[in-house]
Length: 336
Image (tube, rainbow, N blue to C red; front, side, top):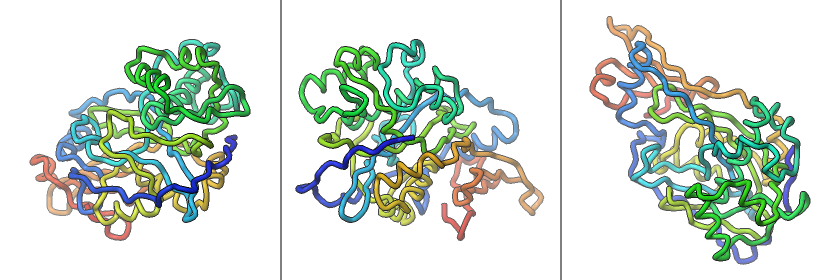
């Protein structure tokens, strides 16, 4: 479904950066595990916690080819953020209801909305809103815009003061994405996106998101900018390098971030990743919490993400009550 823009020339590009570690609530590897989770997990398993409804969201794994393979653009969330503070993530955010209200307001190129609806598992209005969120949030948080004057081109530069004024207005929700595209005469290039995965925030979280992960290549002539108000650092890094830093406990990531990094690492370039996106399974991944006997006359909570055994954690009753850190068990003796 997606097409790939010609990779931008990078004659003076520096080598991929190594992400900086940050103080976190991760364990000995970089798995995100806030101290309040054990008690919330137990409360959910025991029926004492009512899950909040997840908000639809989208995030984009933006790729750029280098001589050493593709690199992905990541940002580190500020320590002051209420959700996943200090964790490395991709540009992304929630759906704007205005993108769903009028299907004729957004100039559209690429696969039609009904095709995206089938791919994403939602209705056409919902598909438009999710795809718009992916493109808008990439522009808001990275300064990269997957849109052009016509269905065959992409804007080459988004760094001027007028672009920055529009970006700020989008962030503040003073300007709708449809109005932004319309007054600039731009068409949303949905064909530059490939749907990669879908993860839903665990039911015990206070803030929940139903998030579609997309992959895209950096358009020719554009460059990322450190403009996100939610991040204190941005970096281009090889997926395998970021995953290795997570394994060493140097970088904090939520399960969907490290899972998608591991999946990207096997692809030799951005085009290969985009080509693979069409075959990806978009069945939602949702953590499960259940109670089981601990073998000592008590019970413990088992937290697992179906299909992703490395994230499994066992929460003893005492640690849940104290809000402490569990001893994690998973693939290859995973450490907490």
